[in-house]
Length: 153
Image (cartoon, rainbow, N blue to C red):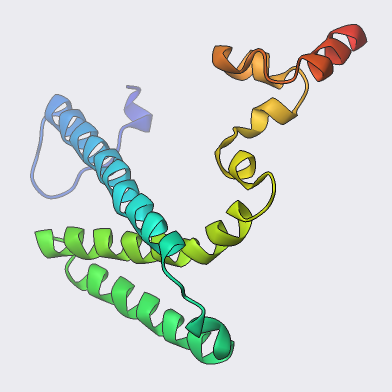
């Protein structure tokens, strides 16, 4: 690392190699937490598609402010407990609640004639030529549009 681009470290003097290891550990833990938080989101979305949240439609303004208050309260609790395992549990609960609120959207989209394709089919299949470049599994998505794309080249 060039000397003018090195971070300024204050406090305890940590060797540069240990500092890099510590930074990599923080980054690795952050990505693990991100991946772990997707699990409760999926569970919440699965629960949300199977329950009826129609009572929220009866009073949308009250429901909006209730959900907003719950969100801010939960984020406040996560912030207060960010350095403990309780904060991780609160974060996972928050992502579960967010997934739960995705349920009505998924219900309405899955109710369409092609709803399963809209939710589960990757979008690169719909753009000519992109499927081949993005992922080898998607090569045969739309052979007609793929032929048209080759003809334009």
